[in-house]
Amino acid sequence: MKLTTAILLIGLLALLVPLHAAAAGPTIIVAAADASLASKAQAQVLCSGDSDQQQINYAFTLLPPEGGTVQLTEGTFQTNGWIHPKLNSNFYGAGEDRTVINVYNPSQYYNPIHLSRPNVHVKGFTLRGMGFFLIRTNGVLIEDVTVTSLDINGVRQPVGGNGMFFIWVDNPETGDITFKNCKAIDCNTHGFNMNANRNVSQEKKDGVLPWTISNLNFIDCQAIRCGFGMENGSNSEFSCGFDVQEANNLENVRLINCLAEDNWENGFHCEPGWYLGTKNFYMENCVSRNNGQRKPAEAPYRDSYLSGYYVHRNSILKNCYSENNRNAGFFAHDGVNTTFQNCVDVGSTYGFKIVKGCKDMLLKDCWSEKAKEWAFWGAFGDNIRVENFYQQNMGGKAVDGGAPTQSNIGWYYHDSQYHHSVSYSYFDITGYGPNIEVLNQEGISNTYVLNRAKTPYPMPSVPQIPAKSIPPLPQPGQGGITPVGPTISPITTVPIVQPTQVVPTGSGPVPTITSQPTVVTGTDSWAARGFGSARRYSGAVWGTGSGTTRVQPTVTIGTGGIVRPSTPFGAGRGGGSYGAFGGRWSPF
Image (cartoon, rainbow, N blue to C red):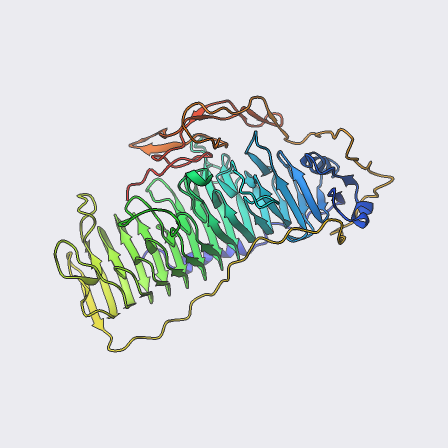
């Protein structure tokens, strides 16, 4: 194996450096319309309960150049547009169960909290309805935040972003981003989505291509029930819990103690492909369960993912657990230089699926329990090393009229490209369960150490991560807040913005919508929004994806910022998504 633990740990040490310190400077308190009288008495800015993003954006203009904090009180903030945190600022709520930002705009589904300036810390609220985070910068820490497509009335709303936590890479300054205790629950799209505009210049900055996300951390995060299918209001029929890699490169990524549960497609997803760069991708103590179970796909799942972990290149997964995923627990496709260590699957159709051009892969001390078909499935690979693998009580499967086996190598749907066995590989497998062959022996230059256990082995310990729920709505007028830093006097220094006043937009990058989106063709009414166009990889060029054609609005961000003219883009199957949803280019 070329990727060693030592090399990976050297890369990960850089991630332990704090990515964001709380901004110095004053605190501007913004009070919700239903906040307590005590909180309103502390506030410099009062909201009316209508278009509250105007008052919130105004509060950021009151901070000095060196930054500071915008502190939301308890209560519900009703917004219908973009929120723009300032450079070197903190954006805090009073707590996930005390502060809610409820987003609703039936004429424009693209209403993000837009992090486009570096060094921003977001903490302590629940974002509901049509809202999501759009991140296009570096030095970002988001913690203790829940995001859901359910509004305050429990109605599922459309969301225009590719993910509820959506990183869109269109510049070489995107990275040093940490999500800590962030939850995406009951969402119409991906919970977490990383993507890139590969149409930007290929110039490098410090050796890094502009579509690379560097130093990305997910700590104690959860994605639950993300994606509901096109007919139920999702942006795409492809929605995962953690979609960590689409068109973007990755360098130095950690996912620690994260949960993906009951998502429409994969729990954890990285796009395969030689053109995608992946360095130092590390997962530990993560759990992925019941993914793909709601999607009406039928076996053999060749045109769907529906797996717990879909991870391929230059990666280490350690002590990760998969349970009852529709397709595979752990699925590597076109993978290289990747290790699965002490990983366990229980009850998926396939425990470990290592197929379609994989090489230099290691499974060490892994376990498959109650796989519905094969515990291990390998095809078309080289140097696949399986050490101390235990498989127990699997269903087994026969192919082409042969005898059933507990695990299989070589067979792949009779596809001429991939229907080949593995070679130069090592298999040390102990099986317990049905009295059938532990593994069929095919390929060339393979070593087999195959054993049968006489009694079942006890299950190894696995990480236990209970699913969290959407926090309850705050009660109007109850409670107060303790500011996180020095505040500006609400009487003598900063004028209080009353609900009836016209609020200036300030000099920040407030978007101007110059045309409303219209549906050009197609039957669905969900107008996707986003930066970039849906594309698919075809041969050596990037082409336009097929599917329903829509028109984006013209969006101007600030002065000298992005201007995206109205352009048709595809939203059907057949292309990876760039800013707006596409399909999947990869065959299965």
